Image (cartoon, one colour):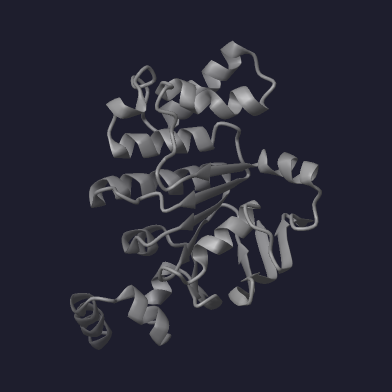
Length: 254
């Protein structure tokens, strides 16, 4: 579990995050949503330590990440897995070598153990048989699955995903969503996904935090969105005329 208490972040005189408090739960897909420029990426960067909060607390199962020393934060990051928007694979390394990278850097395993663990992770994302290929030889969806395998190689307690479906077609996006949801539930990981994908919101949104102009505007589950009376939320989710009409008809039929 990750708990945020009264988190604020400012750049010079501009306040980007405004007194945010929330809880991201174990074994659930926790989603952060909001318009571009709302502050959700800044929030994610504060959570993983890429930015330092102006004030507030970030508690990883009761451990205050903000007050940790540099060495303590380095050790803490070994409990984190990260999936970047662009997959961020090493082009000069094979799929297997990419997944082995965190094991090479941070584990005490021997080569045989690291290889076995990396292959287990590739099996988990249905990529056995692609281990000798290079990133340039596989599709964008496969690259995202390699990134997921790499992120779970060290058995993280916390998994952070920045726009994991960016650049993918709807069908492939569903595959990635189902994979992240399955891994989260099976391993009881605290998964936090920063997303614009409304399919993700409706299908795997077990705990959704909506950020609006630096504030936590709304929090709930995907099933609550359709009936929400929060205008800022509904304007964001049902941005097109078609979606607005669909929601209106559904509400009338209730």
